[in-house]
Length: 92
Image 1 (spheres, rainbow, N blue to C red):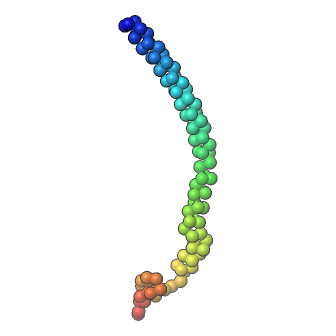
Image 2: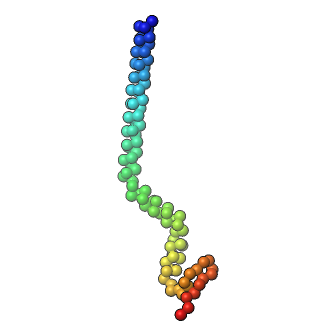
Image 3: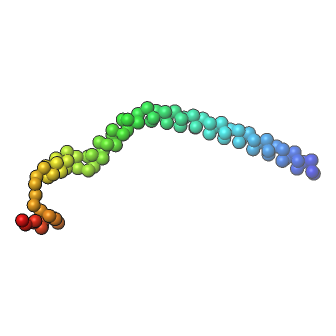
């Protein structure tokens, strides 16, 4: 009976080792594919940064908002503080 148990344990260990070896091979293959993808992304980093900049510009309001901001800064105003259409004027 002890010999049978030992033999069963050895057979199970062999099977587990084979499964583990297959899993390791599969992980190595996946790691190689991921490394290839990372290299492709690294080569297109500048393109991604430019796209992110353009999307941020559009999300912030684009050309119209930028033009309004620049025009507003160019004007001289006597308004000390403003909230909506109400403003407090600075008198001399």
